[in-house]
Every structure is written in structure tokens, then in C-alpha cells.
Image (cartoon, rainbow, N blue to C red; front, side, top):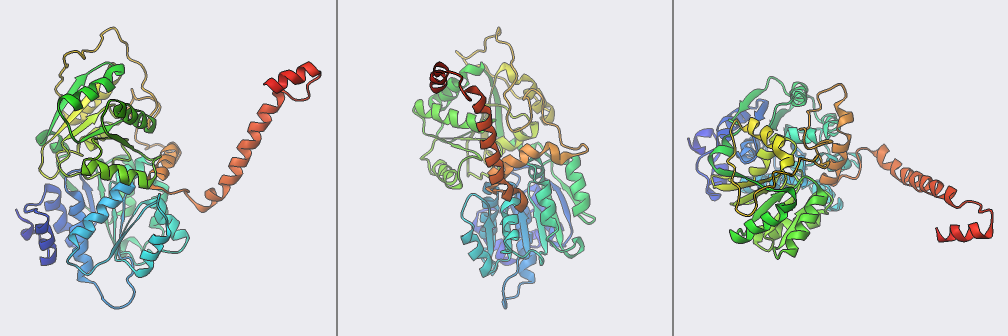
Length: 471
């Protein structure tokens, strides 16, 4: 099947041809005709399956069919993404495929100045790609009008809920026209109880579209596990990169601190490396990614959330320096390689602490990942497993994080929401909370002072006063 058979217009087919694509992926074959008909869609699609083009192409065609050249452009399509990098990737896809169409688009996310975004919105855009936090910032400042949205897309909806965005999503939905007045497209790698509840509220008789979830891991990506002691992971990683002459490697860690530390250690080993995570400024993240793409940075060390949306052509190697606590994150990680029909390699360095995490991943994949003990790096059988340090996914890495499907999912997602606001650059979840921050800081300073006072308050003698001064 070719793109010609999907009902796309000449302008879009021309843009697709400019990119060198000739055959649609399974998710594109199934989603594009349905979206062109104006139906709501609930699509199960993993990263690397071509899902972005799967909704971008029909969205562009539907908007262009009703495009009017006169008057100010209202925002007619909204795409919500969980991270800045994914927002930038979707925005680039909109520009690429819409280059021959008279439509305007904008991408807004936090971590950068808001005024240029306001100027862009004032000039009028047809398609807006945004992260929830910054979008609500604009809504509060009344710099964006969402009352005329015709198409809503939630991209990687499961990740947005995992990051604690459910309350922000509800606030955004309250700013949109009623369900019957717009088309809703929800894309998710998994269908948790939360996703199903969101779909029930958001979608109107949706068309369910699914593609085989693990084809991406089986067909194009060579996977291998190298057992190794936890203290020798860094040594083995440097050995693999150097001895095999890997020139471009994406390495995953669980925590931001771990990403910083590993990047510094690799630099000490003579390997150009950079870390990318939510505590980095948008400028630092952009520079690190640009250096990685142009070859200036050989190793990019990333956390799971920060790596969402990284789209690197022909990335050859992905390394799980630490296994993720959530099995689905493994699929998302290795999906950074083996994209657009290219082959890739996914290497996991697994210590005794991570054996249960590895079993959970293999249970998800319904397959056993080959093991290969490298000479000189055989693990010491006398070393016992230790609890995995707290990362973004719960209290202990030995237990996978449960979906927050209980009575109060918002409460269990509070930490994730805080991390998510750092990832998307939003400095607040609502105006009231933002105003309260200075008061909290004042209280903390006050309580800190009060704790210090009893240690040397009102000394009873000169000797006591000398001791207090030393303290």
C-alpha cells in the first residue's frame, strides 16, 4: 500500500515524497483514513511507529479543506504533549508535512521566554502544539483563545497521566468547545484504567486502532543483556564505547543526579558526553541534543522523561545503564533506535539488583533477551542484591510502579506532577499555588532559624558564650 491510496491531497503527498517516504507504517495505514472521516480515535501506538505523521497528515488535510484566508487566524487544532522535546518534534513534523499548505503553526513550552510565544500567537496560528503547563500559563494571561478548536490531539497520553498532568488536562478541556463540536484523537502506548476513564470522558464513539505492540523490539532492534556488577557498569560502558568505536550512543539512567554523575565520569574517561534531564535549562538541553546530532557529543546520558520526543535519525546504539522500573519504559527507550526502517542495537547492563526488573520486561515482550557475559566482566556471585535507589517511578526499583487507578490517583501523582512541571518548564500548576510560594519560603527560613536558636540561646556564663560562638 502506498500513501496515494490513503486519500491524501497532492500537497501532502509532495511533502511526503520530499522526505523520501513511499509506504505508510501500520499505524498510518489504519489511522489516516479514519481521521480523514472526522471520527474520534483511540489509538494504541508505541514510539517509533510513525504515529506522529499518522495524525499530523490527516489533521493538516482537514484544516486546509476549511481554510479561510481572510481575517485573523483562530487556533483550530491543539496537540498536547508531555515534554518539550516531543512538542518540538511534533511541531517540526507539522512544518515538514505542511510546507506546501497555507497553514501556520506554533510550538509553546516552558523553560524559555514567554513573550516571543505571545507575539506568535497574536499574529494568528492554525495549529498549536503545547505542553500543558505553559498552555495554561497563556490561558491565565489570556494570550490564547481555545474556544474555536476543531481537532484535539493528546499525544502519548499515558505518559502525560504518568507525569501527573491529569488535572492540567481537565483544565484545558474546560477551555475547549463541547465534545460534539470537535474531533478528538488520543494516542497512547498503553491502555491503563486511567486512560480508559479519560477516553470515556473525552471521546465520542471512537474508532479503536491498535498495532502489534512489540514488533518494534523484535524486527529491527538487536537486543542483548550484559550481566555485570553494579560497581563496574561505568567501566564496562566505557570499554564498550571505546573498543567497538561507537560514535553515537544514547544512555539511559533512572535519576537526574545519576545522569549528571555518569556524564562527568565518561568525560573523565576521555569520551565527550552530555546529560539531558528536567533540571537542565531548555537552552542546555537544546545545545546537548544539537551536539549529539552533529557529532560533537559522542554520548548523551538521559532520563526517561527528558528523552521523550528525541528523534535522532539513524541512531545506532541505545544503552540501558540502569533498567527502568516500569517495563513499558524499556520499549520506549529502545524505540529511540531502529526508527524509520533502520536497524539498531539495544544493550542493557544488568546487575544482581535488577533481575526482577529484567523478568518484568521479558514478560511484557513475551520473549527472553539474550545474555552475554563479556570476558573480564563476569559478575561476582557472592554479591547480594540491594534495594534500588528511588528514581522517578516509585519507592523501590525492585517493584514496578502501579498505575494510579485507585480512589485518588491525583494524590499519588503529586511527585510526578512536580517533576513534570520541571520537564515542561511550567513554574506553577495554578495561579493560587504560584502566589503562595514566597510565603512557603519565608516559613521555611523562619522554622530553620527557630530550630537553630535553642542550641545557643541565652548562655549562662562567659564560658558558655565562648562555646556558643564556636558552635
